Length: 100
Image (cartoon, rainbow, N blue to C red):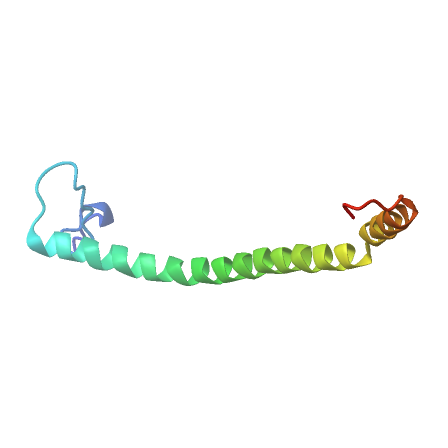
């Protein structure tokens, strides 16, 4: 039978866990950590970009809906026309003076 080393005692460099809090890192280890973090950031950025676009479209739709509804409701209001008609009638009924 051949002797096998336990799997937990592997000395391969790619299987070592790196704890940056324990001590200074070699330049290779810091470059590896930066590369892995950059890959993870790029992967997450794609998901976030999609969510951000969706959120922006929803907020933009709400803003345009409120804006459109405001114009629609203001265009249907007739109270200013009624006030102007009442003011016109009141001016006609008022006695004429030399100041008018």
